[in-house]
Length: 304
Length: 304
Image 1 (cartoon, rainbow over the protein chains, first blue to last red):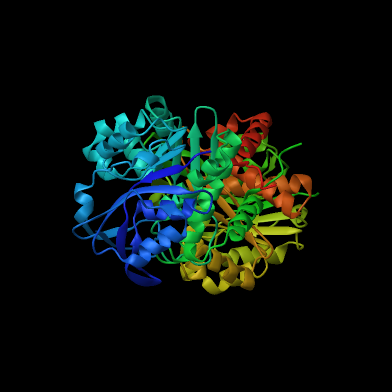
Image 2 (image 1 turned 45 degrees about the horizontal axis):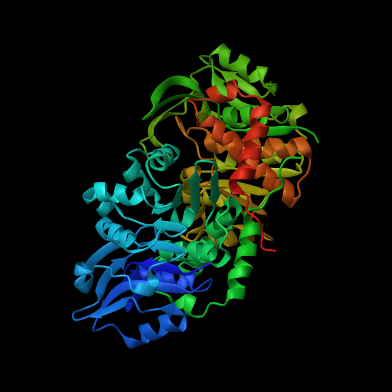
């Protein structure tokens, strides 16, 4: 299958958790997504950074085989995000967001990116997500993320995105906000009626759910002894999920389920260290080994 | 295998949830546990109620084949619990607790209950749990529940219980309080070093985890379209879990995993209605059908 394209943010994060802190480290949805996906396939990246963006990060992303033709470097400062987590690691508290050059980001898709096999629309303004969809030939599979900020402020544009995508990947709070009710099964039915064919709900330390018209799939998160920094878990989940699908070209139900596990595996590695530090030293053998551990974790015999 | 013995409370509950309310309905850990377990095996029950306890509830419990020889009926009023749930259904807010005759409950085990194959010590004072353990011949498997109230006030007695039981069944908040740290994997290691061979962590709508020295097992909760009243979910989980083990007599790892699913199945039915109302009309075929649905929910192909 062809390439995987991601549009999102590349940022410099400053993060504090009960287990330490990291200052001005590589972050952003597209950086997390692309790095995770790069273990499975080649990735084209669309994002914007400022002139202050450290060369070492560009080198790192390139070293993962990520195509940075679509990474604009503009006058001004890179997107900064500052956040902290309490022991309740499932939710970040944002201390500061400075979009900087990201504020006026208008994704421009280079000619050779325009026929992606799979497309991931990271959490950006739904108007920009629509803009991207207009610029590319319809991929085999489009997935998108969003956040409460857009659900509250750009609901109409967001629904226009959702009508055109195959997979919506959100956390449970976002799903409930979008569906307007507390019960996730009812939320899923509502969202699937109006938009995407698949709804993936990320529940952090509680795992993931996949709803579609035919089936529901659920998996716990991998129980970890050390969660140092949950930042990027959702985007690396999406990266593992889409990366695996792009690598195999198989979009069957069975393959989607395996992709959900590969996504969970990538997220589980990511949170073991700050920023992308765990993924920097990760080996594909470790990914496969953890996939098999996931199988042992969740397996039980059916009734005869 | 022989019989399953449960010691716990039988109560009259008044419950309000966003989906309705129920007044003075059958509740209590032993009532929920025994009813769920009765779908798999015969159950001996130890508890106390007052003279005001409605005959219809006695008739119902008997109709489920539960042996009530050990259910004392004493002068005074039955244990009353009043609670409510918000849309965040995972946690009850207790409005009122009137232990009444339960306050001076001293479990006395009738002669013919004293050689149980399996024993479940419901959430009661750890001193009473120790008292029960002294009165019975060591069963093949003992499981117990507890709560933060005892973890805070009777920690020493509780650890003496835990040294003697095989399985501790608690929710994640209780596990963290007992282990004294936020990370569940570390909590599990700590608890398993000092006490039981198995730790089961109930996470409500997020599913269950089983830790032992060899393995970890995790399953999501069954995604339900309607959760009307979460009361009793934990005790019916334990009832399904222990009931299945008692019925098969198989305590292998594979059997424990299936028992975790049967427990989850029973909990999933329980929360669909107030009190024990869903279990009153439940059929064993429905239990098996939902077990198979659980398999479909969680199944994915391993790597080849």
